[in-house]
Structures are given as C-alpha cells and as structure tokens.
Image 1 (cartoon, rainbow, N blue to C red):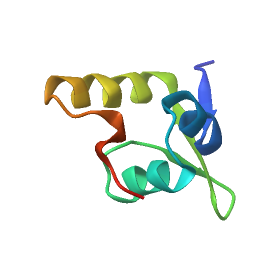
Image 2 (cartoon, rainbow, N blue to C red):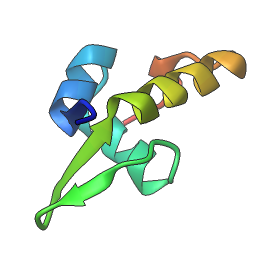
Image 3 (cartoon, helix red, strand yellow):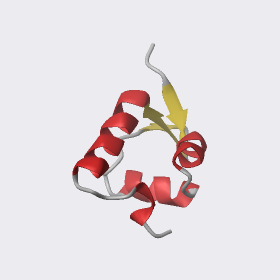
Length: 66
C-alpha cells in the first residue's frame, strides 16, 4: 500500500502551516483525497510531484502566504 500523509504531517515536513497545505489542496495544486468530512490524505508520490513542480518553476515552498 502506498504511503500517505495527513495535512498536519505535510505541514510539519515542509515547515508551513496547515492552512497553507489546505490552500494548496483547495486550489488543486496539491492532489489529496478526502477522509471523512474535513480530513485529507496526500500520497507520498503526489507530495513529491508537488515539490518537484515547485522546484522546476523556482518557487520556494514557503512563498505561499497563509
């Protein structure tokens, strides 16, 4: 089974707020699948693709404002 992360785990790993991660999800920049009414899970592959895409466009992960 593929490794998945919570919003909180992604936020901690990237050193951004949970709100920033949710904004990326809401804007469709970071693929995630819903769990329950308010939770999300992000696959390891999708997270890596998101990071790689930001690097490819010279965007710092922390460029987003909460």
